Each structure stands twice: as structure tokens, then as C-alpha cells.
Length: 261
Image (tube, rainbow, N blue to C red; front, side, top):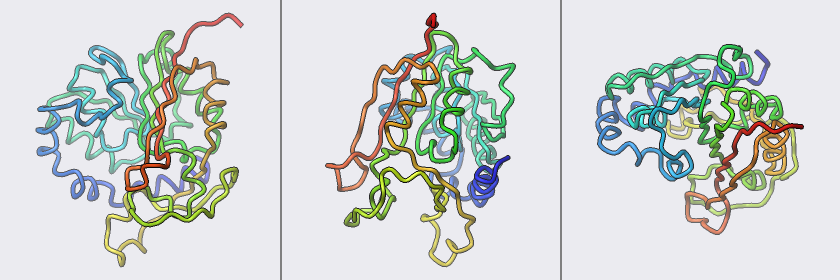
């Protein structure tokens, strides 16, 4: 495991289960809401995913199962790959309460042996801040491509790269924004684990940090195209705070077709 993965694994192994329980709710309570309206928990992504019944879906860095479980309720066969045991604990409790099966693989995705999984998934689904955890986006994209069946697709939702140029990259804060960053910077950055800010200030000092690599939109699109994906859609959305005039997230939809080269 490389340095970035080791650092990020440590960060995501610290009080994650506690956060999900406090922030989302107890698994039995969350499961009830997911059963009553699973599509609500998938937000706009459901329009890109389509009818998932009987589809095999790999939810990479699927975290606590908040997307995987609704997909399973809708009839999908879902596999999560994630680096955190704490995330797995919550996800498995959530799936049990929802009455669905969930396969959960604890691994650094880049070190996962996929020989037995190549060309086996209808959909690869990634959402909510994924790409900055990887140092080699080309290899990352190729590995996803190899997991998907011919005719299958990728649905990737992530933070918009334009956030690189703002002093504060916290999309949930409502403060004024200051342009201080460099959009083209390619260095690893020390950052907070995603849920640290939800804990009291005096406890935040105890949290392990992450190592993050922020990509440009050109780097992202180029890496998936180079892997062999056919880009179908790139849908950009606004920030989730009051700054609706600035991009905050994007969704990339791409397909895998057999092309003679």
C-alpha cells in the first residue's frame, strides 16, 4: 500500500461508525426510510443509473452503504469496495436492517486483485468525493474499465475541480469565497477526513489527516477516455451552499463498448 493509501486508511478508520450513527441515524431507523423511498437516497443519480433491477453494480469507495443499500432494495446485486472497517460495520448493519444482501470488500481499490471480477459488472457507481484519494488516475480508470461488462457503464459523481481555486474547499460552508488556489496544481495536499468538521473543535485536533490529489476536469475526462470509455454525458451542477453561480459537482456517464482498434 502506498503512502497516500496508508494515510487515508488511517483517517477513514477513525470514528467513522460513530459519525454515521450520529449524522445519518441508527441503522434500523435509516433502513426504514430507505425501504419506504429508496430512490430518494439516490438523488438525481437514479436517472443516470436507470433501472437497476437484476443489475450487478460495483459501488467503489461505497463507504457506509448509503447508496448501495437503496440500490439493493431496488433489486440490484451490489458489491462495495472500500478501505474502512468502520464503514463496513455500518453498511452491513444497515443492509441487515433493510433485509438485503450486500457484498463488502475491504481493500485499497488499486491493490485489489480483480482477476475473477473482470467484465462482470453492469454498472460501476462512484459518488461523493472519490477521485482525490488516488494518485494515478489513468490506472484507476483502466481498472474500473476492466471490471465492467461490454455494454456496461460508469456513473461517477464527484466534486467539481473548480473548487481547487478557492481558499475554503468545504462546499457546505456558507461563508464568502476567496480565490487563492491554483487550478493546475498537481501536488499531494494534506486535508481533513470528510466528517471531521462535524465533531467539536477540541476533538478535531485528534483526527488523522488525509493525503489528497485534486484533478482538473481535463485530466479526469482524458483518463477515462484513454481507458476506453465512450463519454456519453458530463453534467455539471451548482454548489450546495448559497453560491449557486459556481459549479460544485459533476456527474460523468460513460459506457464500455467493444471497439476494434
